[in-house]
Image 1 (spheres, helix red, strand yellow):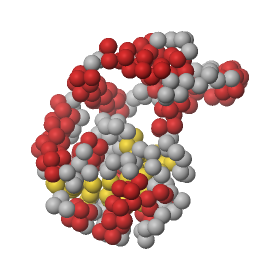
Image 2 (cartoon, rainbow, N blue to C red):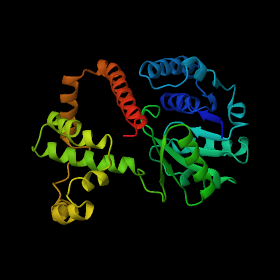
Image 3 (cartoon, rainbow, N blue to C red):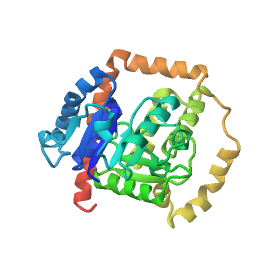
Length: 313
């Protein structure tokens, strides 16, 4: 598959355009907002230059940008596509409407994927004639810097669609995982939610400050998790691997699950405290600059991992 149609040229759509064009695909984007469409190519050009400066491109930004164009309308954008990535706002009515159009306009063999963060694919594809080719391809923001993609099946998504989507993601340098059954939040957000909910409880009940909680993840768990998953982590944290770890510490984790801290919840006053602490450390008008800093740090980490992989380490 080499022809990709991208619906929605906002932050996620533009990042997807970089991913696919960088991977050698011909990309067409479309957006109903004239201003968003007009700004898209310039913002993509800037993103590609940043990647080049970080040593993360094997071609020039201009050559990659040459594989990206704005479509005049939806029909032109997806009419010859092998794969379509939808990136509209998180509204079920919008998803249903656009997927009905995509099913009508895209070639019969094209895969239709959504970037939705939370809506199950079955909620907007059940009535489609071509529902077997539909799935969720949930990226991590920003997808051109964080390569994981969750390929989430619906009850009727075909094995062929999943296999072809997975092959395409691997072809363009992403890291696909298959979510075999629909579950709210998919996998990544459920893991993230478990950590965030425990973090809220620890701060709300006075065990740690928001700043030190962030330090615990940033300079502790996060260092290992930047190159190992949790199962590999524990496999290396006991002399004889996972089974040994479970024998040593399983009882402790069972007690944590059976006797959790009192719930804090996202309506708890602790959220206001955390926000106040964050605004004291980072004013609202500095968020965009900090996001750019984050992206540069991610590029540095990607460059390091790329170098280590090239060395076979």
